[in-house]
Length: 284
Image (cartoon, rainbow, N blue to C red):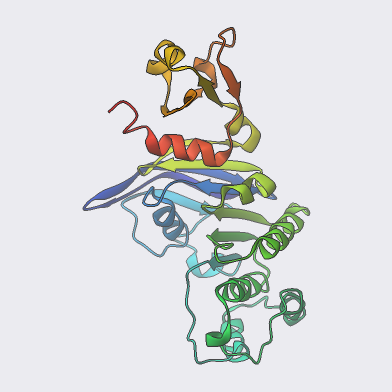
């Protein structure tokens, strides 16, 4: 059974639309959700959580339509957002006592284990927490009610490298048993290179690709060569940059002639995103 199944999601705003978005996340895996600001990630995530009214399409979580089974399904969904501000004058303890009432499967032992692991003092007020601590508290709540699908939107923003690495370890631990699945939207693509199994790339409201992480990265090549060599491949490049040595450019692996003298490497997720962002201006 799929943990998450989005079928032909459409949502139109005056100056933007998410068009025919489809993606599938199997149980027990981490899917990285990438794209530039304004690409449609947040609209897709809000649609998954039934926070906005979609124009058309269907979203199934563990085989059930979120629009029809919202209250039931939200018992098994955990959310963590990097930019949510809690009521700052309250203590952690007070907010937790309110939150836990909404969940049938809330587990105090799990919650206190995460407080200890994240070094959170439940007697502190939200106003006393750093950005990173707020993210950790948000995650502690999300992980303490038996959630089987975690929807994470920029959960590692504001965290130092050590704390980020700790969270990535936790995410990988969670999916080992095959029961928990994670949709992980972030701009910190190096985090996804460490922990994601699959990558879904959205641009201008449409899915560019959704596949196993290594397959996704291997489907592109980063080329470098002289300015003279640029003219040989210019029309096939997604985009390119000129530099003092010549150029570097991104190309679909299927379009690359491996017998050429151009240097070719497998790009990082960040490089793929950067060159896609440049493509509108590449030939100006």
